Length: 129
Image (cartoon, rainbow, N blue to C red; front, side, top):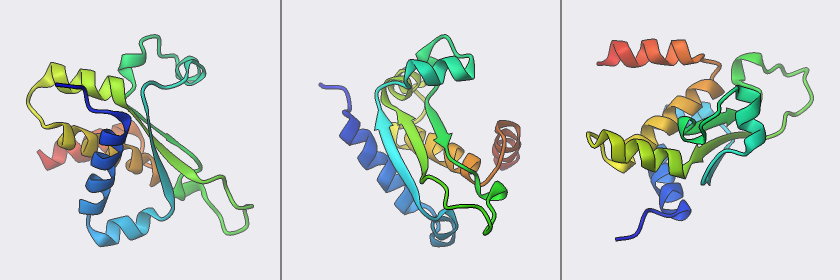
């Protein structure tokens, strides 16, 4: 059996996004989803992360809460999913499907696109349990 590829995870991310409510997808707007094996070392250094397996996803862009119609057009917002850390977490947990974990990471990073902090997202997740 082979490990899921970058394309496999990209397909899972696309399916997870397509499964979200239409209103949520519409509010998200233009966001580029990208799957890489690991984050670049520069990103890890900027975030103060030593172990590349600690970062499963990352939002890059100007979040919607900080945008203004007076601002120049921002660079496209991007959500990065990191295949190897996601696969590692999936194998360690064993209590969720890979599709569920990819969907969770994707929605978490879209939360940052909406301007939510990690604490905000954790509070929302805790209230949903």
